[in-house]
Image 1 (tube, rainbow, N blue to C red):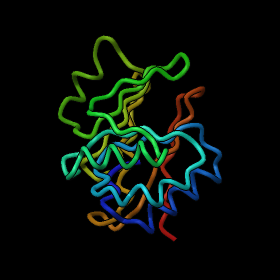
Image 2: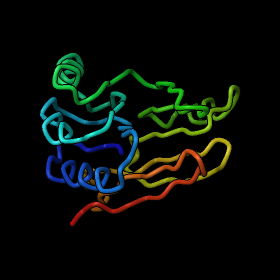
Image 3: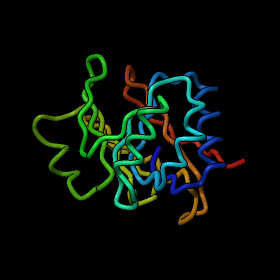
Image 4: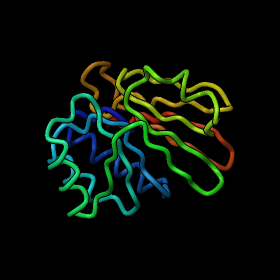
Length: 159
């Protein structure tokens, strides 16, 4: 997920969707906005890894609140994760996509910032899950990625 922009209700719906799908890990590609976003995300029963976005204000307090409440970790992007045999790059800014898509080639790149859904490629698979907040596009979405099959699906979460 990405670009939640303090929309607590839709963050809660995203958590419900992730729990219903029994996901193994939640990635957030930035723009949480305030430390209050820890509240709905604290209901996740799985790990969360995020990166800061350009609109995340008090980064120190945001990171501290997430870690102290056991919500997850927020890193500076781009952040590289090794998930089993897969390499994932999590970033907010799309400006460096061409560089990230080259050597060494990751399996998956997840990015945000544009608020626009983008799923393309296969090596690497590039995914922008759109925006949770729904403020710019009027659509609230998340992405589900199967790392075994290297397939991505975009889901609407607004009820």
